[in-house]
Length: 588
Ligand SMILES: Cc1cc2nc3c(=O)[nH]c(=O)nc-3n(C[C@H](O)[C@H](O)[C@H](O)COP(=O)(O)OP(=O)(O)OC[C@H]3O[C@@H](n4cnc5c(N)ncnc54)[C@H](O)[C@@H]3O)c2cc1C
Image 1 (cartoon, rainbow, N blue to C red):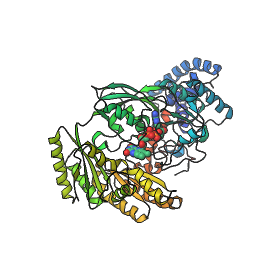
Image 2 (image 1 turned 120 degrees about the vertical axis):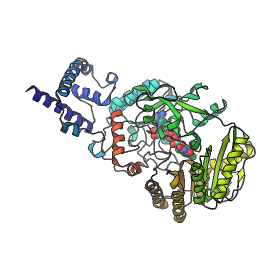
Image 3 (image 1 turned 30 degrees about the horizontal axis):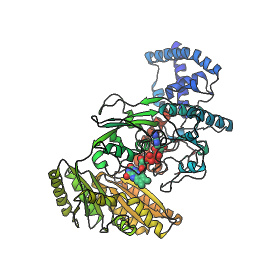
Image 4 (image 1 turned 135 degrees about the vertical axis):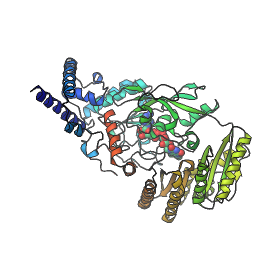
């Protein structure tokens, strides 16, 4: 008898729990449901909810200990008696398929919306610079002309908030979580795949860190790390570090800030030597959806203590938590470095040269590939002070302990390049030449856009990136280039060749959009078919959600969704990015 009562109770709880997983809305939930919500959500702070009536909280306070003890006793007894049968275990899901979710419900009551805004403003204080609803700022936090995925007219947030510190971010998220208000974190706004589009329209709140949370907090020169707030621009951090003989390892788009660099796991031309953001973050301070503040770990270079929470948030594109502070690794600036520029007869030979360099274990500071069209466009637009050979060209940074060290590497580089039919070699003899030679690499994207706009002022730019194993780099880039050339569109290719990562910049007007789409689609599919990834450094955002599924398959993406739901059950944090969170979302 006892066994059957216990079994029934337990089964009900388990089936209730799995129902809750399918329908994760807890508004108006019973105390027991709230308790179970806590089991799923973890550390939710209901005491701050303006919606929880005092009576409710009293009932909760008196019921929770009793229910907890009762639940604990019955679950414990069941476990002891071995009453969890195999069927129950089999029903448990480690992953969350999209079609088993109910659509998220966001705040859509105008009275509540007004209340939310008043409460959010109260957190930030009276200063009108702490928030904005000006149409210009709403627009600049919705879209940019260089992104590949533009926001629609409706995809505009309601308000931009400029928090001053982590505590304020925590209070803001508590309020947004309690009222189910979508929140989009925003740093430099340079991401390229629609990462910060307010997909949930004007009920969205954007959190911008650039105005106040832009301080470099501590430099630990001996430990080679620096503690910064999320809104520090990477270029400012780099020049601060340069003054101390150090540098920041990543170099994404001009204007990008540390929060966005972490959220997108960015990298750039230096990744070959210093790694991506995944290798450059020591710890993070993160505010979770319910307002909890966590620090992912202390400051040692390595740690095997527990889960890699730091890694969980890097590349999560603002969907799991909001980064407010980070400890970032710094690197000692190379005391001796030169730049080499080597053109090749074909892109395949240039790419082969890179594979050989990697295979020989030659450690260069950067290896960048610009195709012949890119070199031509740089000449046409006069973006640099010299005229270049219009051939696929490799740009190298060669660093070392002293000049002899550099000479040795340069001679090895020349040998490998000659074997791959290099047309000529050019090495910078001084710092000015070094800058001049590297300049061509830096102006690549804008030169392509300038060239396109000269022909047709209405052109858009589609920037996309993929990465493949080094052994496949030459064939994948070669095929991609051939297809782009035959398309008739102005397009260029630039590669972080040492990482097997390359970008295409494609100019198109509205009538040519289907051609551009097809080129990108084929390029991404080609990379995936060659054991590569749909993005090496730009991230998924909105634009590559379908490709993430094609690359990984359903189960890993369903696991990501499950992780998202366990941290953010109401799906308020940067909704709809990386993967779908709504079965009614029929966008690509
Ligand atoms: C000209 C140009 C060149 C580029 N070159 C490179 C390159 O070489 N390598 C490269 O990797 N990328 C490059 N990029 C892309 C871009 O610079 C990177 O993706 C960069 O990391 C974005 O940072 P951001 O500060 O602009 O982030 P944003 O665009 O503001 O945001 C990016 C994402 O991060 C989230 N986010 C922002 N702040 C936070 C936070 N504090 N906590 C949690 N989530 C947050 C946002 O919600 C969004 O999903 C380039 C872009 C341009 C325009």
